Length: 149
Image (cartoon, rainbow, N blue to C red; front, top):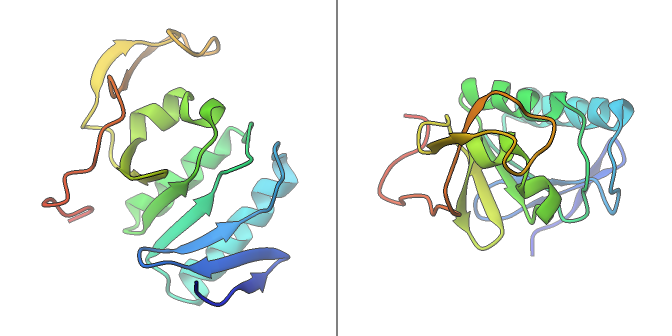
């Protein structure tokens, strides 16, 4: 395993695909936690030039509403974004189902949302009331297609 680095009190480690940010065993993130994650990602991407990032979601049960939007902003700027070991609760979120594809065991990669079939929202998440899209089942990323280009 790669060397661990600490930035803003969070653990960073490198695997063969990304630098992975680990916030620890925190289950519920509030606005301050999101700010800490955002600041760390800014440091990783702008400061260190990382173009492939990951976040360990192993213990997370709730994330603030701006989390997925922040990740999509990085994605649109050309950064590959992966979520590792998301809990079932996170994996059932409409945004997650719409924009993340299973890349390999417990590793999901962010995509532009075009690879999903339309369904009525609210089917598995009470707070959504508009038409959304999601994969009908976990979808594996086609390894022959490049992401973002």
